[in-house]
Image (cartoon, rainbow, N blue to C red; front, side, top):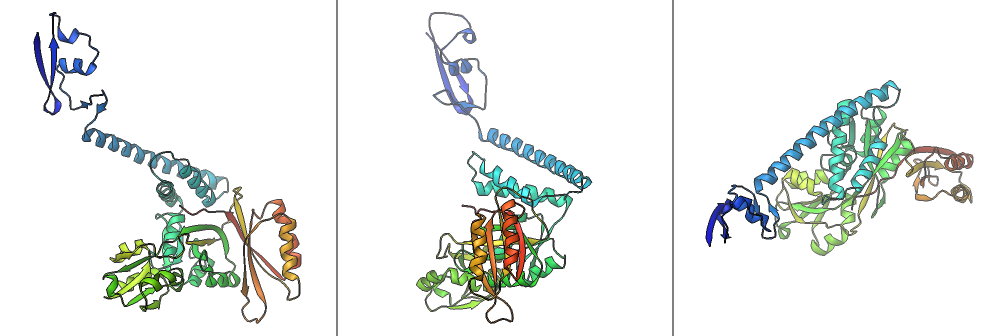
Length: 411
């Protein structure tokens, strides 16, 4: 019997037992292909397990990832070129260069169809920035939001338009409306409703004052964090928006009893101020913590774990029907018995499901109200048109604020 040893990658030794014949070893058929490869004396950086599975090296995987990254970048640029071509064709046909509602539909559908390890939120982010970058090559958008940067309105603006749009912080909700109304901004983002606190009064007031329309919505899942540069035991005052304090009322009462709270115009402004004061804290987003160099002292301190703020996208667009729409309206009725019941009965007769109704006192009146109503469906659908025609006869004033595709919050 003859023993031959063949060195292979990684310092391992393969030993082959040869008995009773003298033919070349590389011609010998064996049941174990691994042994045959070793006998042929081929040096390789690849290893194989005892089960015969190929084990690749770290460098092999790194090279595969690099190749995929290059392919992704190449295809991203190809997509951007096609988007530019599509925009030119749309303009030649007297159509808008882009369609925000269609972009949002694509993001929803494509991110929900992924079957890999990446979750839907991650896939949405990738698609959103790809679309945002392509759109900015054709029509750079200017979007106003309640600032400063890293407020929840800023996060909602990024969620809807991506970071290739010009996102412009302004001081108040009223200023967002003014920017859009004066055509200084293409769009604005304003909070309209929170799942804990209900309506946002400043927003409803501005819809009553200016002829600005709703052309979309963003449902943002809001997580509040306690931010500071000191330990929790050293905190003696906390800054935030009144709405944020309201949404964390129980947690603050349990864990920071007696600590003074100070109202601010935005959570981001609160974080900015807390960053410069020892013993001060802010209730704000984790993005604000990163921006202003604060530590997250406590995470997810909101009392309602399903805390969602709905933002209205305001502008002058009139989105087409998507098949999954809602319509927002505002109306005034005469001050007499049964007027509201008569108005609401119209929606029942036309089988339109109401998703939101709010009353809002009219400026300068002690007893007159405006009503804000949302229903499922697009204003251009037949039953919606019938209902709105009937409602116009029952109201003193009727404003169609807009029809737009529904948005769903990320999990």
